Amino acid sequence: TKATQPARYVWAAALARSRGHVSADVIAQSLKLPMNEAMAVLSKLQARGVVGALGANGLARATAPIFQTGVAAPAQAGLSERLTNTFSDTAEKMIRRAVDDITISDDDPEPPEVSDAERSAE
Image 1: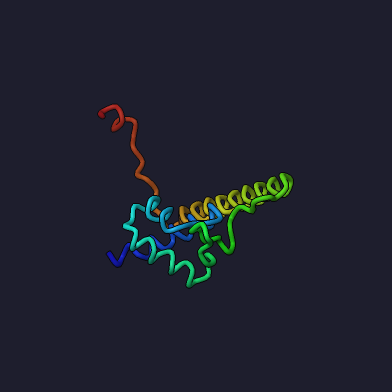
Image 2: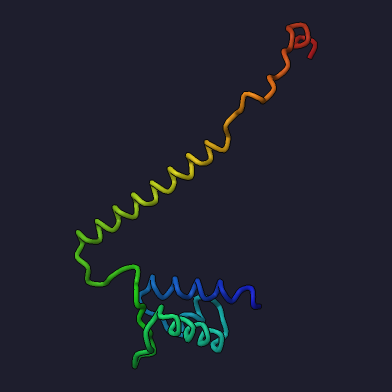
């Protein structure tokens, strides 16, 4: 359906960037699409510059892969630390917003007082 086409494109772009390369076969298998739709998604990825032209092996390389191959281990460790810090900061901000939304105002009524006699009757 037309509503799912943007989602297919987004997932295919994420797939290409995470793997570093993608082909119509990979898109078809991963997203459970017919081959003609997978080829259409791949051509859209190429047109928008997410991946380059198909190579001789049928793979199109991502123009901005998430993980760089051949990067030294210390650089990967730095990336891991930056991602952890980013996620921690984002989670902290979300928690602060949620706490701010749950503030009790002075206009909220006090709960009614219950006498000891009423409590013992219950």
